[in-house]
Length: 211
Ligand SMILES: Cc1cc2nc3c(=O)[nH]c(=O)nc-3n(C[C@H](O)[C@H](O)[C@H](O)COP(=O)(O)O)c2cc1C
Image 1 (cartoon, rainbow, N blue to C red):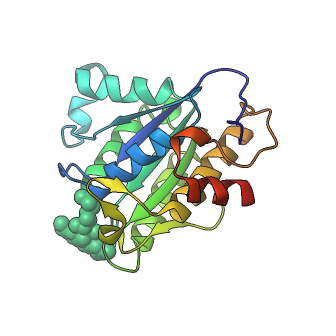
Image 2: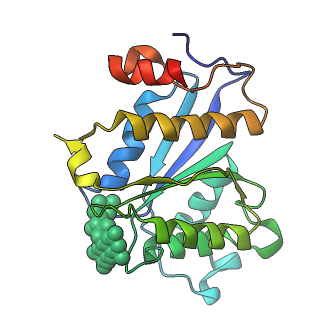
């Protein structure tokens, strides 16, 4: 199978809603990163930012905050993978999105295409957190790439020796990223998935071709 053809190198930003060192959310992001075609670059960054304080925004914004906003602005699209905390959005992710939402009329996320994936060791897959993330993104005018929610339940059973091995979920998420690239006019291909076949196990390649 050929990799997706794109008009130019595509820059995506991956955000993990968890700071945990062995985070499943980050593991899923790295699996997506490896599965993307060579001309699609997904940079993953953690969200260790100060707590939002309007007194420390504007001219007083820290270098970390400026760099975070710049990385969103420089990307063609954002991929968020997040757990659910107490039936909602983890504070670290909400905090980062609050930083990204300002300045109010010039948010780096305004009109930015965003794909959201939620994960959980529970079968519910963080679906409530995902709804909450969507609400927050809508408040700042981000372009959520819609469709059936990408919800990864029982995630602990799907990470083996640090690798995310649920190829059906991975393929589903890649399909949404492919949709995002079509939406932003960076894909000329009719092929369904933004994947480099050589980087995928054989069973996922079959799922991709079937898609
Ligand atoms: C404070 C806290 C609250 C949590 N609340 C939920 C929850 O409401 N629903 C759920 O499915 N999992 C919940 N969990 C479990 C997380 O989904 C689990 O720890 C997950 O692995 C965290 O994501 P990570 O692996 O990316 O760090 C919670 C975990 C913590 C630490």
